[in-house]
Image 1 (cartoon, rainbow, N blue to C red):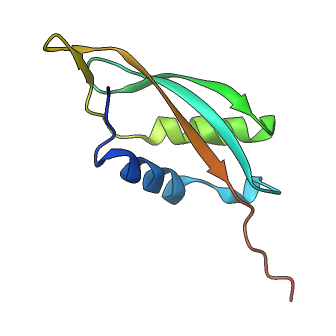
Image 2 (image 1 turned 90 degrees about the vertical axis):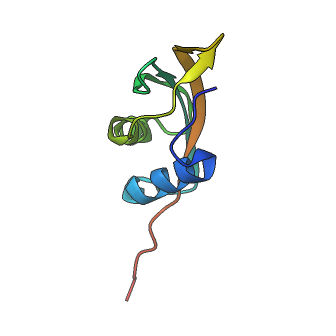
Length: 97
């Protein structure tokens, strides 16, 4: 199984820090699938499920910013492996004063 540097908590923090929340009007999620290649690059991002198609572009942008992952291994060799994760959107808090 491939691993984001620092594990799942670090992946969720990376998404949280880089996500532009201003695109969401309510809590929504986009489910992304990537292939972590033999070199650890996050490639071939695909939206598997989305509650709001307008958020898809932002979720895919996050993938383009990702650092190298620890590649998946099988029989002692690095392998291309699919990985699925959610990108959660929450609306920005706006000051109405």
